[in-house]
Image 1: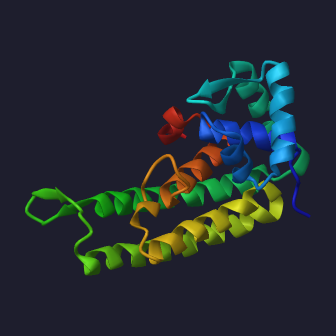
Image 2: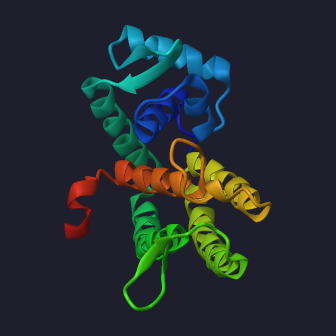
Length: 213
């Protein structure tokens, strides 16, 4: 049976992935209700685990060092209680092998190389060029989906990534081209980055030292 994380674990992790987020974006990471998310955030603010800042009239939250440290302890404890470290580690290694492909795909989406060293920004005027990249993304989506299927079987909190990837891919296929790489929105690349950070946080790996792992 897949291990279910407590709401505070999910909110703390979502805050780490978002860096600086509104209630709606924090709740969307693991499909928590707004009511539950707001209640957990209020408790965390009181305990100095996160702080709230008003940005142009909008409440946004960020982890404190204490909150980040406790979040890492939560995740480490989960792995031990569920006994799934090896499964998650294997999923992470499979994901890491796909990461260069994703990075190259995003570069190709943003910049066109004519083969002679000259590059220009992709204005998306060449439908055939864009389709070739989207075809590559569909293949990559299948591969990351297989990884997520394995992760979801052991940790329930990984089950929302598949639907978020699917939503972004559907937006792309309908012609909304910003849904591949645009930041500050749940684009395909944003969800990919968050999954990467989730795996790092779960396993206690620092992103800066990842290549030495």
